[in-house]
Image 1: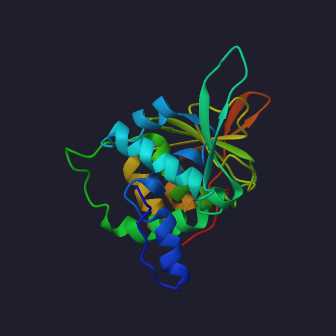
Image 2: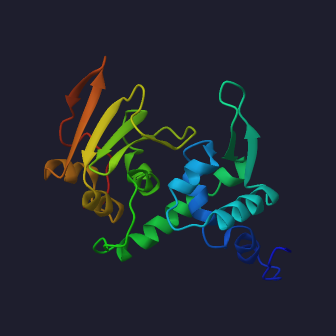
Length: 214
């Protein structure tokens, strides 16, 4: 099927030709965690059909946003990963998350939630921390974020060697995305930040977090 286009000589239109279809940017969000198998992508994108996911991945390969490769034995599986052009969409997703945060409101009964979905909006608020890898613990799960600009941006599950651990709930994650500073969240008792030294967590003092609006 030919790719739909706005047929406009406009940079925004060209960008939307490539990533404007439903699910595409959310697939990018998942691949910012590094290479993912098709089954893992499907599990973390509740609501997408297998046909649509396969179609979007093919479109992303054609646009040079993602690529597919075969893992060597003993794990002979295919994985998808972002190209540099795909990784360059991180500021776009960050801006969309900032823009969408005021519309979050109360979580609806039909809303799915994965803890690592907070990685993109939370990452820039952790960037002012000294630790290079921050493990984030929530009731919904655990993920870890790199704060030094390295790749991948985040990973699902605990970090192998975290420099700090941040414990908070989903409401506080949303509040931080909306402008609550991490320092303020720690002082209010809404979040707990611990540095990890030689495998031993130590609670960070208030004021050690990234600076932001309160």
